[in-house]
Length: 599
Image 1: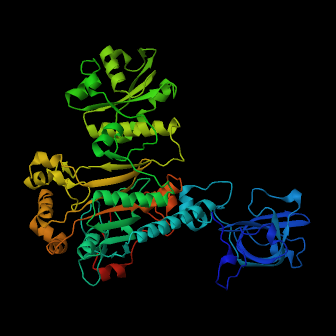
Image 2: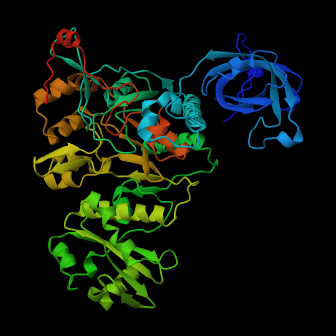
Image 3: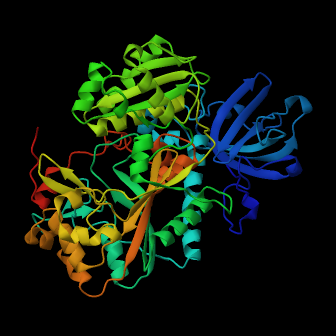
């Protein structure tokens, strides 16, 4: 953490003259006042020392010349807030502490005051014993005293500052959009807020400011951004929270190229990358085929091999059944030099694929051209030759297989297996950032049970311009394979941003609502204001939104999204510190004309 020098401040009135990480040998002889938390107390008989800590560091206080009442000092408790005044002196050579930035000096205390006494804390934020995650979330304010979380808060603050500066340089206007807004389908459930003034009606907390930023383009704003809160009532994962922050961007008369150049500049600023930094592009289809994911981690290899055509007459019933049902078989090859697997290690891989619908992982080894183990007796010479031709790697090693009649299950299982190997085989450079544009996402997803289409992104995404007439035609086959003018930016296996060209033509937007099975009444009820606005001259426009929390997570080199947020929630969408959500009082419910059903 960059140390803050109070002497550089032009503002008077601080209780302290310096921070606890600021003093050095050139301050010797100065009278200073420090404020902070009692970090450590050492009573060595005739010598008494206290370490005082703040956000910026730790300084040792010495009491060998103290004239006050030591009995009072000895009652100070760990984590109490104290203020001490005294002179800076160099430590003797034998007492230097090279592990502390301030380790060459100490403050000889003349006056000391306990500003706030601390009860015994449930854990010490700088203690050697690590507290349980739930305990740290319950006492988040104590955990925030740790250097680690304070450093991440500083990283987040710097990221927000860099974002604003990069966008201001490009002529953007920062605009706040409403939090209380209209419920509109965005792909997840809304958090709703009942209206007291309008009984029976609700506001919705925005899943994103999508329609609002498009309305700003209709309103001639040209270049808009904001760092905004968004809310989605969805099932949570390790990298998701019910409320999150995004860097929201929209631009009139913009092409994909412009948005990508803008995003590249922003990423370059945030991650401090070289001036010649460029982001490669991959199609959605290629990403799924090679990695099984639309957000692949490309810091390492182990690309997937489509082995479906190689096992048609293998005699291996599992694979033959998959092929008969037009399923998919994918292989991953791990070179012998990378890892030789034991039978126990191979058998344990079922636990990697099971959460994704997989029933197991088939395998066999190749050594000096000979196959052994696993399904080796079903591997024909032709199949082995085919695998070698498809495999970008050469030499001996182990082939692993995921197979299922459902292609989506195979992609997910092979992706999980690849990521597992990436971590456990130490194939990933943790200090590396690998970015990727993923293009040409599907426009629509067809739900066979409901017999209808859903928008993969949102209902305002432009179909691929080269296939716009096919979209207007509305044939099922054309719609099923229709790509979108959509793009995601991926880093190290995380989607950190996504956007698209927007629909700006009323005819195309009406067709989109029709394709999604929405009646005129439904469209009028949910989007009437937006459809009306499109009639009055809408410029072509495009946008992108970055997940700020995920960006900070990557910058801070943590894999826990909660680390990147000052006051996060659990994966059950609860706040253990404040005990939210909580039960409202009856008077509140009566005012809102609400009855709560008890389960």
